Image (cartoon, rainbow, N blue to C red; front, side, top):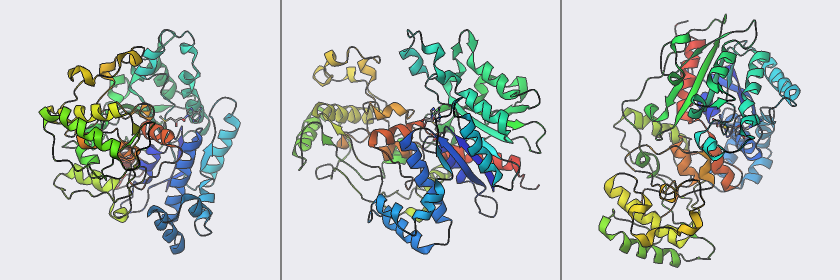
Length: 500
Ligand SMILES: C[S@@+](CC[C@H](N)C(=O)[O-])C[C@H]1O[C@@H](n2cnc3c(N)ncnc32)[C@H](O)[C@@H]1O
C-alpha cells in the first residue's frame, strides 16, 4: 500500500477518498499512516473513522459484531470504545491521528511524527495530502475584514509555509494541495498569493523541484494558468457546486507518470437525488417546549395557508418524530451511471440497513418555520431560490435585528433547489441554517448534518463527533470524498501504472 500523510486533516474528507481507492485486485491502494489536525472534535471524528477502517479490515468477528451493534444504535459510543474486542483498534488509531497545531514551534514534534510514520512503511513512494486552512483567502473572510489592519499579517496567510516545510523536509513523491478559490485573487502586501505559493511549490529548496499539475487541464509548466487548477465538484458526481483549487505536485526525478486529468460525468447529481431519501424530520421550536409537536403543527397550518398560491407537493409532516433513527431508503433509479456511483458511494450495500446518524433537525423560531416552508414551496414551484424580499411583507424577518449584518437580509435565506446541485456547503453552516433550507416545504427546516454530509458525498456510516456545531463545521470544511477518490485513482495510476 502507498503511505499517505494527511495534514490540516479536518474530518478526513480527502483521506476518506484516498482510503477508498482500490487496486485492480480490489485491495486498498493507499494507507494513511499519519493525520495531523488541531481541532479536538475533528480529531475524534478522524480517530473513530480510522478505528472503523482497522476493525473492518481485521479478522475479529467479535469486534465487527460490536461495531454493527453500535451502528444499529444498540450500544453507545463509550461502550464500543471500551469494549475489549474493539478498543485495540481505537488504541492503534491513536498512532495514526495526532492532535497538533502545526506551526514553527511544533515543527520538531510534527517532523518526528511524520518521520516515524514513514519509517514504519516499506514503500519509498508516499503522498502528502491536505491544504493549509483557507479563511484568510476566502472571499467572504476577506470582505468581512477589509478594514482590519491586522488582516495582512494574519498567520493563516502563512500556514502554507508549514505545508511547504513538510515538503522541504520529507520530500513526498506526490503532494495534493487543496485550497479555496479565493486563493486565486488573494494579494498580500502587493504580492499575489497564488504566484508566491506556486513558485515555492515548484522549487521548495535549491535541490528539490516539483512539476505542478492540474487535475482538469492537461497543460504543464508555464502554460498552466492559475484558473486551470480550479475544480468544479458538481462536474464529477458531487451534488454540490463547490469550486476549489487542487494543485498536484510530482517530485522531479521520481519514477512517476504524469497524473491524468479527471473525466467529467455526463450528468449532474441533484439535491433531490442526494437527500430526499433520508428520513423526514420535524424540527423543535426554539426557546419553547413542544413535546407533542402541537406548536410545530400550528406553524405547518399557517405555512400552508401562506403557501397556498404555490401548491406544494403532497406532504406527510403531521406526525413526524423530532429525532428519527429510521433507515434511509434510496429509490432504485439507477439509470444514470453517475447517480449509481454516487448512491453506492454514500450508501454501499454493506450498510444498507443501518439507521441514519447525525440526522437531527435544529430548533427554529416559529416565524422561521413558516418563512422556510413558504420559501421552499415557492422555490419548488419556480425551480429557483426565491428571495425573502419577494414574499409578502409580513413574512419578512424583523429588519431591526438584522440591519447590522454583513450580508443583506434578502440574501440570508436560501432554499436548496431539488433539481440542481446545492450551493457550496461552507463551515458557516454551523452558525446559520437560513442559507441551507430543505427543499421540502412540509419539513420547514434547515439541513441536518447528515444532509450536508450527503451533499459533500460522505458515506452514511461516516460518523461526525463533537457537538452539533462542531459537526457542521467539520462537514463544511471537507473535500468531498467522492471527488477525492477520483483524484486518488489518478494518483495511483501515476505511481503504479496499470501496465507497469
Ligand atoms: C479546510 S479544513 C481541511 C479539510 C480536509 N482536507 C478534509 O478533506 O476533510 C482545514 C483544517 O485545518 C485545521 N487547522 C487549522 N490550522 C491548523 C494548524 N495550525 N495545525 C493543524 N491544523 C490546523 C482546521 O481545524 C481545519 O480542520
